[in-house]
Length: 133
Image 1 (cartoon, rainbow, N blue to C red):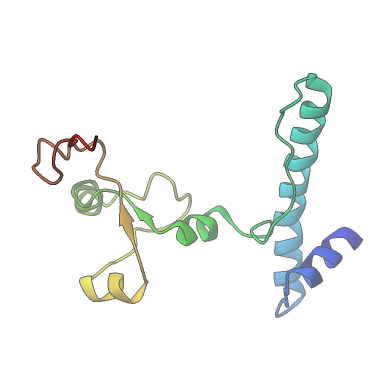
Image 2: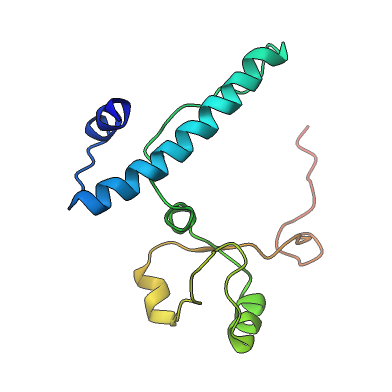
């Protein structure tokens, strides 16, 4: 727990009560276990460029909090279909579909959508490569 309190102080965390503190400690401990296991595997793999992980400001966040930071939304057609069918977002466990309006999306800040592969040349959005020599 000493490592957690040091990390929390370094990252400016101030939890409102002991329940919040314990929840964040549990999340941080889960992240710490993943970091230790991954680093151990990397050290024993013999691969010189193996990944080495460490804690950062997201170490005490839930997966939903991390996803909300990314701002990536599913394509509007999928989101509309999911809402019509009353389904939950596939990447958000134990959460209800968020009621979104055009105004609320503007208030939430910059949101990005992944529309899949788009051929921008075919869509006449960019020109062909020009000879610059």
